[in-house]
Length: 493
Image (tube, rainbow, N blue to C red; front, side, top):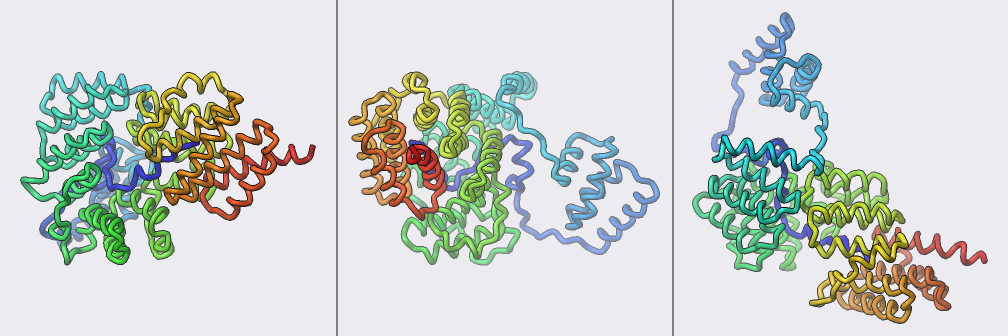
């Protein structure tokens, strides 16, 4: 049975983006203590430059006006100048990239297959600029994508030694250590960065690492300003989001909603990603009154498209998400699940295998790979990996493994053993109060009975369809469709 790992986004954790992409998120900008104001002289100067450009249009002046448009909030001016630069060229690479960003021209993410080239270039760069913390953290990211964990850790630790208080370096380093389940090291570095001076971005990361590693939490009230402007909310959005999550877990829904509303007024991309999870899993009643640009988050967009049953669009966005966070197991888990549930198990196999190239020891990906292989009818292929699905500690992950082992037993013609695994998984999901997962396990069980043509399959299949009727979970809807499609030809015989 597929494991979507939906609890993976319960916490507000920063994404580890390439530096050039992270710059575009505004998350690295240091907040101004004094509000910037545009006076009459500035406006008059810009007006003069516009007149000069009309008389003698040059790329240099277009570049200047493009920046001026951003400063004064004249989107049309910035767009016109960006279009001129894109057509004419003749300026530096950074200005061209800024023009492309204004015009929404997408730069393709670097394919994982080219990471070796990137590692080589970074190593040459670091030979000359060996004190470049950004160079070292970028090298760490490249090693992580290659699955070279120890090299990634060493490079990240050098970066953190060179820039122990830098927001980008610290948050990326923490993301690596969380990825490696090294919670103590993650907390050490973020706590160290947080001690000397207050940065709301680093403090929000520290609090979430403390939650994950089950450490004592500081008093959130100390860090949340009472009177805050709209612009300042962006820098504090992750702190307000984290506070909302803590209130939600404590059962204080009213306080949680208040904090979330503040966080969502001017949110970071990470907050938008987390907000989608909150609205889908915890506070669906807030969705209608909430206006968020979910397209700023590939993860959020993937989930939204999936719940709308726009499978092709969800798969396309999941693929983009893979390229944005290739070190993470989560986009591969979600993508492989969507593919298999939608009746495309061969695609699910390909996605799970891509994830395992980067994370070769991830048991969740092996579970999804085995499930996809079994759904595709490749029992020998699943047999190569099925031993990894060991039931150890009674977690939700074990229950998914039980269901997948049930399918494997059915495929090996061990019907009694398969039923035992499935029925145990169904019972345990029920005991945990997870009706959607219970329904998914029941439908997977019914599919196995139908495909094995057991004497009991008509009763089990029809009862499963009746019990799960009306459920809105996309996994349930898609599995019901698969079951109905398999039943229809048999009922006509």
